[in-house]
Amino acid sequence: MLLRHTTDKIIDREALTINPAKTCQPIGAMYAALGIHGCLPHSHGSQGCCSYHRTALTRHYKEPVMASTSSFTEGSSVFGGQANLLQAVETIFAVYNPDIIAVHTTCLSETIGDDVNQIAQKARDDGKVPAGKYLIHCNTPSYVGSHVTGYANMVTSMVKHFSARSATRKNQVNLITGWVEPSDMREIKRLATEMGVKIVMFPDTSDVLDTPMTGKHEFYPKGGVTIPELISTGDSKSTIGLGPFCTEDAAVLLDNKCKVKFDMLELPIGLKATDNFITSLSRAAGVQVPESITAERGRLIDMVTDMHKYLYGKRVALYGDPDTLVPLTEFLVTLDMKPVYIVSGTPGKKFEASLTKVLSKKVPEAKFKNGERADMYLLHQWIKNEPVDLIIGNSYGKYISRDEDIPLVRVGFPITDRVGHSYFPIVGYNGAMNLVTKMLNMILDKEDRVCPEEKVELTM
Ligand code: SF4
Image (tube, rainbow, N blue to C red; front, side):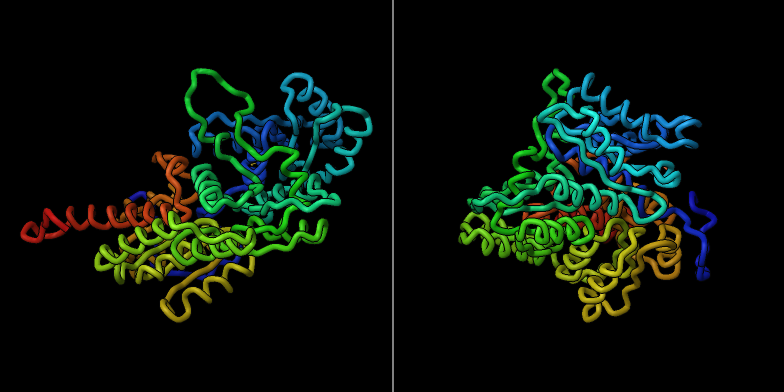
């Protein structure tokens, strides 16, 4: 009984969040920045924040995460961090030689009111940014929003600082990816290549946070979107945003700035969301869907048809990030499962509207909530009142899983106690097969463990 203080009596809380289903803004900004080739993320605040953000990413991706910090002391906390940031920019370019420094703020620098826009401009004006190098920034006060907001802010900053329109349009489509694993980013690129579509995908953390072991440490791994590619996004034919919470602001800004129209989709998790992505990509690029992708879809349908009887009616509780939860919930509904409880610590009205659309007809009894107090404690209380067959979310659900003896399928961020998430995708048709496999095996493992001896079956 690790969570022995969770009661089944639900009281409306007004001011207390217990075990939030989110983490802090700069982590998202740091992850997004790592999706630019040759980028060193920079945390404008105290060393403790930067250490925490790097640790959170390293624990999840099992890779070293490089980032620098303005190292606020008592003095900078009182008088402002301008001197620290200007010195940091000079030192970083001289010692670590990145192509770009991506600065994000922290609670401390936001609270004391540092104007990072002005400081960055001063750094450029004072010649601290060498020719051909770049300095970008975004604001990530962590007392609002979540890591998802921080990711969105850094992605929007990429458009703000780089996207430019020239006289010539390019035959390419922008893909702005929401927060997914490096493996998912690789899979999205594979699908585009399979369709013969030239894309510029940003951010792109594949080959940055899932690099092969070569025996040689690369401070700036080969992956990531390049600066010329980011600049060229203003000349693309159109944009597809994958995940409205993470990408809609950037897509809107790109449209306003460079007149590049966009299609806003959910992340391609599950059958319908992947269908929408493939259709949108095919329409944007004016290409047919190849036989190979139709075959991938067919294999998913075959697997779902074969295994439907084991999944049918299973009650599921989910938590995590809205861009993952909405298409995942839709996929569960497609499988005739029952996603009955869903929470996300990330605020935003789109969450409720999207889930209402997905759930109102098929699972009208479902409860969902996001923002403050939509926490793991509430999810646990809902489960205590009426249990579920499966939990889906990050590693923090393991305590509920253990206490209630409910299998946990690990999806989302952070996953600190299992492996595989950054290598095996959950997007696309192949990713959906991966998800079905994970869920089904968990359900059957428990069935084999708890059913009466005379019911143990060797063959499904
Ligand atoms: S102080 Fe703010 S930015 Fe720093 S780790 Fe805590 S929540 Fe994150």
